[in-house]
Length: 407
Image: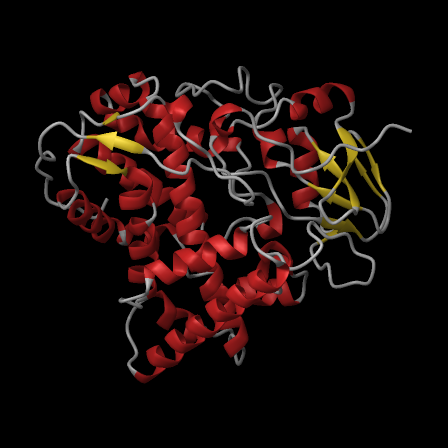
């Protein structure tokens, strides 16, 4: 019997998903892989299988059952108690309480503030800077904290906790768990302070969220706030960093956006499809035998619905490695998942990427890399796959920004 391949797969140059996905899609679209924990699960590599797994209520995200497969041998944020690790009715209840938090109307109302924050950061930049360190990470932190209504968050400590929690090799399980507990305690203090001096941001909305007599518990508030801050800066910043490397080397992608800024929204969707910072770490367990398009997952077996496999499936996305602004199926990508666990902050993430990219195109039309993309190092030993830095240069000072509108 052939030895099972180890998952996650090692990414290719510039963080592109491994060729293993394409090979498995042709030879064994629904086959087993071995996880770092030593457990085995099925891995989907086609769009149809991934979409089916994400949408089928017979697959459980609750891994607290004895014998459930785990991604890593110890603590991992993807398996910590929280909204993404719940099944109905608890999951349904919390989603219902939070359903009004990220509506398109509310998110669009935050666009002017985001543009102002972006302009302030850009105006303070030197001629040469690290786009990852100086913009891609601090801006989403400011945005999510501003939206939450909790100004003054210690971004340096948040970055350190995020790096520790998402590490897969450089820290011990005890160190990762300690970082998560410190982060949890910090968020609990923020919420307590917010109760003393209430604001009008998203956190206040979450505190006062009601469904009849139901409301979020203190633990639910802390976990959801922590998740929003973690995902709201780490994932968005990493997608932006990866995207800027793609757009600036070769530079014609960025130049086209400078000439046609109206393309930014559709380009963002293609970048979400192509530049996910790593594949899905979420395991689902079949609660009964489930027949998928490519095979059967038996009751009690685990399966990972691969974003990378689905979003590069040529049967849905012809020439899948190419960023194509004319692609009719772009909006079908699964970067935010599908079904009951569809990303709660998808509207916010889209808006952030649209506005940040739009401001860069508008204010820094001559932006360029100061070294070839091939020479930029990438993260090692982390769930997140992104460049370590994005060294860039602007020519002269930023272009004058027009007045912000409501978008």
